[in-house]
Length: 376
Ligand SMILES: Nc1ncnc2c1ncn2[C@@H]1O[C@H](COP(=O)(O)OP(=O)(O)OP(=O)(O)O)[C@@H](O)[C@H]1O
Ligand SMILES: [Mg+2]
Image 1 (cartoon, rainbow, N blue to C red):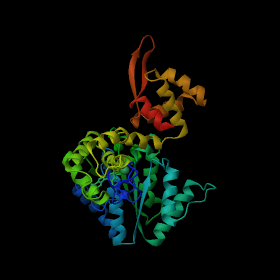
Image 2: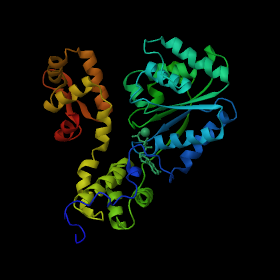
Image 3: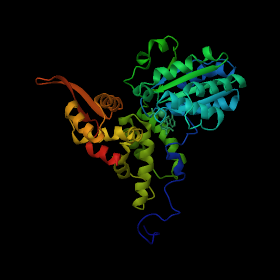
């Protein structure tokens, strides 16, 4: 490059980015296209809360990266702008995967400080949240985001039961629940205890994957805000959208744009080209894998490593290796196998084994290297 004496990277004040922040994972977009009907349904369900009564419960479903969390965030922002009589709290169940920890988050959202770490009983924790609600005459709307994680830990029924029957124990407590699941294989209602099923009849709101033209439209907006003018051509953007549509997860596209921008800068280019996108895709395509891994406990990570080292082996043999490393028993082992299977990290298929009846063989759903690299 003629005006670049170093010949290498762009200098610090030169960049393809106008605002790199718009490609970050926690960025809430200004516009939210192609989700009008879902937004309308959610608004409809919450309308009673704004008028001071209990809202309709909602079940939001849809594959990863289809705008579910964003929809909730935007909805809660809007409610907050309209009234201070509704308390909205979104709980990330990937992080808060037990009833106790969900209610700790609700406590924090109610009082603006964490509950005492000395461990107060669940009953006390719940009581304080509910009493405050009644005392202030507010309506509480709880979004259990990524609720599938509560199911994996067998905590979903208890959590929902407590929330949905709160008014019986604390007259005047008005609580609405939005459950958000990103596991297409999970039948939320079916998996709940019958005592919960009898009180939980939510409105159903579905978020389908975006198609390629919708992705072009949505990512086009990020490009305008995030890149300088003329950095990426329409053709290249279409290519990004093709790759994104393959996975169905909009996160892949956003990550691709950011990485491709960085790749372009690395080779001192002021434009993002197709090759930059192709190179970036080698990392971006694993964004969902990285997200799933980030929520695992140490024990779960250990089992995944053991499965990687014994890819395709029988469950019994894998258990031997796992037990040797962790000393844990078979029941706990089976639970973790099921969770990893539900997360789409492994395939646990039943097969006939000579003389031993039916047994499961465990194999990784992703390439071994990709998994091990990201576990480090
Ligand atoms: N219609 C849209 N317009 C602009 N950005 C969007 C839109 N839908 C999703 N996004 C962006 O895509 C990314 C993923 O969206 P979001 O986190 O809401 O997905 P999700 O359905 O909650 O996924 P998961 O099930 O994995 O939690 C976010 O960065 C979000 O800003
Ligand atoms: Mg989400």
